[in-house]
Image (cartoon, rainbow, N blue to C red; front, side, top):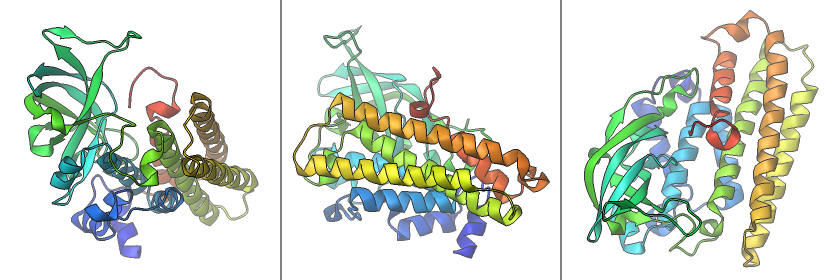
Length: 334
């Protein structure tokens, strides 16, 4: 583990050794059913795994979370397509933004656009993307006026990676943009969020709830790592507030995960109120963690300001992670 930590420390990209370790631990596939070679972890076990990884290293936890979260889309794929794509090792990832178009051509679509913020871009075998639907030269809209769109899965050799991830933290997540030019993809490689073709309970979770919970544990894991390293630098500091905030976050995550599991077991529906409440809990928790870390950091001395110190890396990783669009109120998508 010590050697793994050394490989991860402020790395610009993951080394072959780290990538091999991820594969050997089958971490890309923590949510994937066993019949497709995955770990098929339960919600609580998967969240615990992601939090441990984030506590080990921010980029590691973040990348595994987002890419295993994309492999989670195996549940949205038709079984014949899922079988095809998982015959070989598969690492999915992509953008949640609607930055391109899909022009209908018979039973296929012509994809064009540039999608931003694709975690793990250089490690992927397939890219996922959302695209607005164009038919007969006209953009299609739903009855409520929102654009019609589909999500697509395309091989990595069909995209051009734009290496524009130049942030202070989460460097090895390599969250670059990618470009697609006139790529024809059959409609069988399209999918719709929250329409599932696999029976496991994990695929009965509303995707917004799944996204909130899996990202939430990353912030808590990084905060736990920050606390651990801060106590080494300044042992006599008062860390009670951060300890309390972390404990409360862990308690709320467990509470919400238990509620989600119970809802699924009872074959209940995810109400808009529940989806909103879970998101508000997560957003409030992240704000509390951020405030506590910001309050501590100026008191930890020059070491905490050194770019080559692990405490500084965790700080940069954490606050880069907080810019994910579902935890900010800004207009820019992540």
